[in-house]
Image 1 (tube, rainbow, N blue to C red):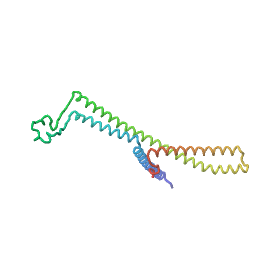
Image 2: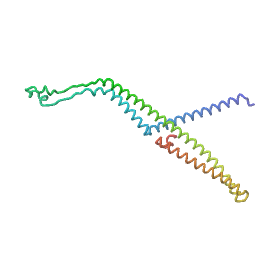
Image 3: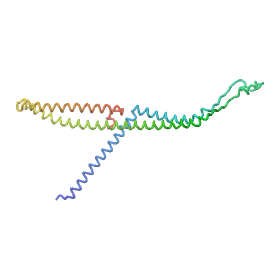
Image 4: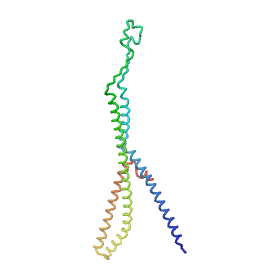
Amino acid sequence: MFKPHTFCTILFILTFSFTWAQGGDSTRDMALVDRLVQLAVKNSAEYDISKHNLRIARNNIKLSRRSWYDNFNITGNANEFVLNPSADAEERGAFFPLYNISGNLSVGTFFNIPIRTRIEKEKYVIAQSEMKIQHSDIKIRVLQLYEEYLLNQKLLNIQNEIMNDLKAIHTVYEQKFRDEEISFEAYNKELIGHNKLQLEIVVLESKLNNTLIELESMIGVPIEEVIQ
C-alpha cells in the first residue's frame, strides 16, 4: 500500500533536486554575466579613458607635493679658471664659481602649495567616481542586453514551436479549401493568423539580432565564445 509519508519523502527529494538544479543554473548565469561585464569593461574605450584620467590625477598630486623643489636652483659654471685654477693668477675665478645654489620662497608658497595639493586630491576623488560610474553603466547595459537576448531567444523558440504546430493545421486548411470543405472566409481567417505569426517571428528575429549585435560590440567577441 502506498503510504503518505513515502509520498512526502519522494516529493521532498524531487523539490530539493529541482531547487539545487536551479541554484546551479543561477550560479552559472552569474559567472557568465560577470564574464560578460569583464569583457565589456576591458573593451570599453570610455572606461580606458577614465582609467588614464585617474592615473593623471594621481601624478598631479605628486607634482603638487613636490612643487616646493621649484623654488631651489643649482647651477654650474665651467670656464678656464675653474677647469685650470693654475692659470688664474689674478684670482678671477672667485667671480665665476664652479656652482651656485639659490633659493626663493615667498610667503604665498606656504599657503598655495597645500591648497593646490588639496585641489588635486579632490580631482583624484572625482576621477575615481567617474571610473566607478563608467563601470556601473557598463554593467547595467550588459545586464539589460543579456536579459533582452535571453527573453527574445525564449520568445522566438516558443513562436517557432507554435509555427511548427500551425504548419500542419495550415496544410489541413489548404487541403480542405481545395476540396471545398470549408469556406473562403474560414480559410482566409486561418491564413491571416498564420501570416501574423510569421510576421511576429520576423520581428523577434530582428530584435534578437540587434540585441546580439550591440552586446557583442560591447564585449568585443562573439557571444558563443563566452557561453561555451
